Image (cartoon, rainbow, N blue to C red; front, side):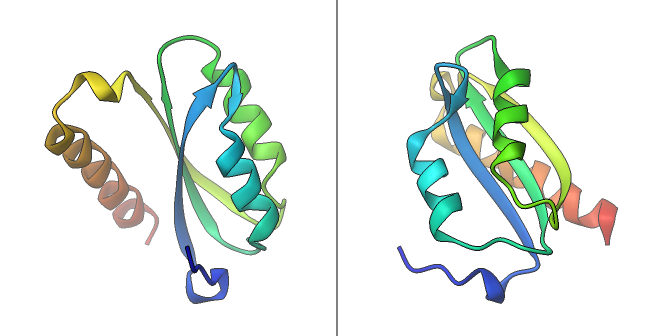
Length: 101
């Protein structure tokens, strides 16, 4: 995947919770991509429990120059139709940027 952080001011990061931590793929993404001075929203998918600790660990992997503007925990999104999950996430993301701009 090609991604140039310099092209964006606002970024939504989404990842599943794996054993009370962010998924390894997200950790790799954060190491490979220099995210600085961005507005960032965090979306955490989970099966239940441990999400507060996971979000705190995630924030520690994000440069302090960034501003976390929103957090969303989405429990068991696989139980919903894909269109419903996309609608929930899309509406949430739109609301975030409308509120802060």
